[in-house]
Length: 90
Image (cartoon, one colour):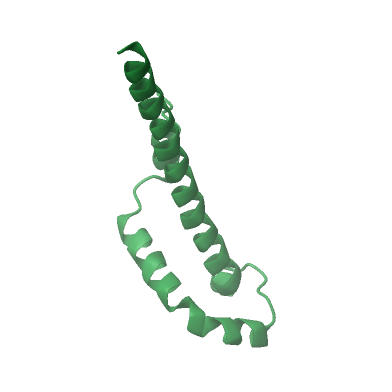
C-alpha cells in the first residue's frame, strides 16, 4: 500500500517536470523560429541581412515561418507576460 502510493506520487512528480520542460522547449522553438525569420527578413527593418543568394535559397522553406510570423503578429499581446507566465513569475 505504501509503496504503491509512493510510486504514484513519484510518477506524478516526474510527470509534472516533463510537462513543464516540454512547455519550455516549445517556447524556445517558437522564439528560435522567430529569430531565424528575422535573420532572413531583417533587411525590412534595417538589420543587415545575409547574402541575397542564401536568402533566396532558403525562402521556399520559409512558407510555414511566414504563416507563424503573421499569426504571432496578429495575436501578440505581450511577450514579457508570456515569459512571466511560463516561468510562473508573480
